[in-house]
Amino acid sequence: MRRIEFRCVDGGLVEIAIDDVPLLELVRQAELPYARSEQLERQEEFAPEPAPLLAGDYTYFSRNQCGWPSRHYLDEPAEVAYNQEDDET
Image: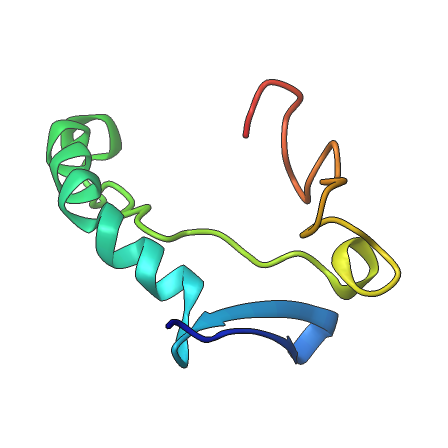
C-alpha cells in the first residue's frame, strides 16, 4: 500500500508526497520524454537560447486554497487554481 502525505512547505504551500517522493518529481519523470521531444521541436522558436524544458514545471496549491477546512482534495475541487486560465486544467 502506498503512503500519501500532505506537507506544509515554505511559502505556505502544501506539498504532496507518495512514499516520500514529491508528487511533482513523479510528474516530472513521467513528462520528461515528451518534454524533451517538444524542446527539440521548438528549438528554432527560442534560438539562440535553448527552448524551455517544461517537464514538471508546476507548483503546489497554497495552504489557503487546499488546507483545512477546504475540501479541495476530497469532493469539492477549487474551480480555478493558481495562475490558471479558464480553459486550462
